[in-house]
Length: 217
Length: 151
Image: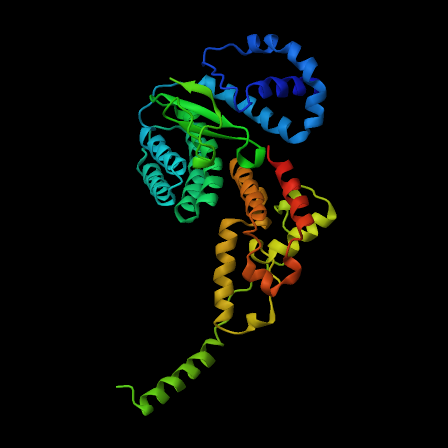
C-alpha cells in the first residue's frame, strides 16, 4: 500500500516540474504512463524520501484530481456564465489588478444567482448546492480583500469550479494548469481559456511558472 | 442655533441615553455545554495545540466566549455581540462537524492562511489579550498541524 503511494507520488512528480511543460491530452492512457515510469521510481526512491512529506502530499492530490477531470466532457453551455466569471477573476489576478478581480467575483456571484437549477435532480442538485455555497463564500471574500488574500481564496475557488465542470460539464475549451510553487510550495491549480501559461498566483513576478495538466474539449 | 443652553440640553440627553442603554444587555455567547460537533472532536490534536487554539480563537469563533469586564458596559457589549456573531458566521469551531466535507476543507485552508499571514488573531484582539498571540514557533507548529489535516 505504502509503496504504491510512493509510485503514484513519483509518477505525479515527473509531471509537476516547473519547466517540464509536458502536456497530457485527455486521451492519454494512465496505465501506459505508469509502465513508462516504473524505472524512474527506483532511481528516485531516496530522493523522494529526503524530499519529505510536503511534495508527496501535493503530488498525490494532483494525480487524483487530474484523473477526475478526464472523465467529464459533457457538452453543457449552461455553465458558461459561471466559468466566464471565474476566468475574469483569473485574468484580474494575472494582471495583479485587485479591482478587476473583485469585479469578476461580483460577476461570479451574479452568475450563480442566475443559474437555473431546475434541471438538476437529486444527488446532482445536492452536490451543486455544496459547491455553490463554498464558491460564493470565496467570491465574497475576493470582492472585499487585498490581492494576496484574493489569491488564497482563488486557490480554494478553483477546486470548486473544477468540481462544477466535472459535475455539469462545459462546451468551452479549457486548460487545467498547475504550478508546483504556488500556495507555499504545496502547488496550486487554475483553469485557463488559453493554452499559453499565465500564472495568476504571482502575476508579473512569475508569470510563466506552471504547465498544462489537462485539456477539456 | 447652537447656543450654550441647547448644548447643555444635548449633553444631558446623551448622558441620559447612556444610562438608559445599560438596561438593555446583549445576549451572552455561552452555550453552557460541551458540543459533540466541536472541531477537536473531528480532529483530535495534541494538548498544547488544543489549548492554544482555544485560547486564541474560541472567544469569537465558538459558542464559548470568556468575556472581559468591559462587556458589562453598553454600547461596548453590543459591539462585541455583533463582532462575535460575524466571526461565528465565518467560522464556528463549536459546530465544525456540521460543515460539509467541502466546507471543512476550505475552512481548514483559510484557517491556515489567516494564521500564516498574521491576519488572525486580530491585532485589536491580541492588544487586549496578550496570551492569544502566537509565538513564531507556535505559528509554525499550528500551521503545520492544520495543513496536515487538509485531504
